[in-house]
Length: 149
Image (cartoon, helix red, strand yellow):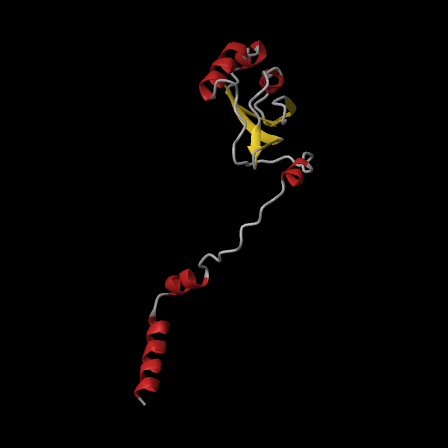
């Protein structure tokens, strides 16, 4: 009789718990076995363009070198200066496994020739250190803001 009464009390306490505690118990991570992916499986996916990888691509010399490169090479278009156009142009491009830059496109521009200038400078960048996934260099999409002011 006491066991039945205890079970009813525990059940009542369970329903009295906040729902977040119940969700935490339900959503607890399930440990799945680690699956080894053969290196050739990654190499076969070279046509896949990644957006996030274990090691992201890097401009030679790092972020500071990239900023210095942009400052030295971006020319503020006279048309944009005369019109008082300023802002940030967002350029997307792909860093290939060999570090080369391809597929440079303006995601969001500001006009006045700034979009074309940002795209020109990105296309003329030296090869980057490529991104890697599972130790293999893979193509990675990278978005770069170029500020005009």
